[in-house]
Length: 338
Image (cartoon, rainbow, N blue to C red):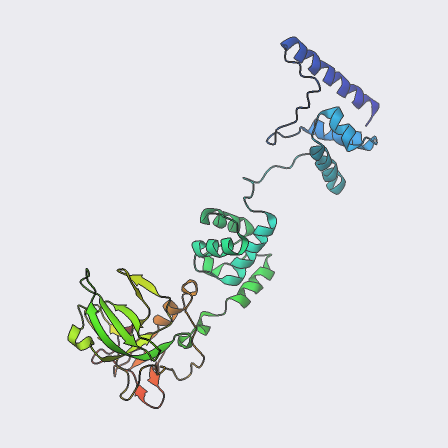
C-alpha cells in the first residue's frame, strides 16, 4: 500500500477512537469481530489487499483491521483469482443444500424420472439422509434450470449433457407395455360383503400359490354374492398391496367397466388358477411388484379395452392363455378394462 494510504487509514482509526472515547463507549482491542451478516466496504477490502501487497501476513492484517482471519483470507483469495475486491451482489437466499447434495439432487432428477416433487423429495432424502421439504426441492431444481413437470424435466439451452442423460434414463413411454403386468387366472374361493361397507367384497382367491390371496373389490352393486362363489376370473397380481377399509388387498379382479355396468372378465374354458395371461407381440417377464412412482399400471390401463366381440385386448392384442384361448367379458363390447 502507498504510504499515503497508511496515513489515511491511521487518521481514520484515530478519529474513530476519539469518537468512542467521547461517547464513553470506547472498546479498544476487545477482540470484537464483524457479525456474519455484515459486509466489508470497498475501502476495507482495498485496505486488506494493500496490506497484503506490502507483505503483511494474514495474522497481522487481521489484528491491524480488527477483522476475522477467514475474512481477510477470503478477500485476498478473491483478489488473486479475479483481480477484484468489490463484493458481488447476492443472488437471493443462501442454498439450504450443500453443493454435493445439490449434485445428487440433479442426478436423481435426471435419471429417475419420478412422477412428482413429493416422490423426488422422498427419493432424495432416502439417498442423502438430508431432511428437506418439497418446496425447497422445487426451488433448488428451478435454480439449476429444470422446468416443466417433474416426470419430464428438461434443461434449458446450454445443458445438453443433462438432456442426453435424461433421454437415456427415461425411455419412450411406448416401451412401458403390458408385459410388465402379472396377469393370472384365479379362482374366487369365497366372497363376503365387507362389514361396514355398502360396495366392497372381501374375497379369498387361488392364483396358483401355496395359499390364497385376500382381495377387496368394489363389486357388491354389480355382481350378486352368489355369482362370486367358486368363480374363475383374471387378476392383476403385482400391484403394491393396499389397505381398503382395514383389509389389505393383495390383487385386483379385472373387469370390463362402463358408467352403468361392470362385468368380471372370464378366462377361457380349461384355464387353471395360476395360468399366466399373455399378449402376442409383447414378450417379457412381469415385474415382481409395480412401482407406483413409475405409473406403469396407469400407462398400460389406458390401452386395455374389450373389442367388438367382447374379447379383452391391449392395443389390439387379446388377453390369452397359451393353448386354451382368450379372455372375454360376457356382454360388454368396446369398454375399458380395469
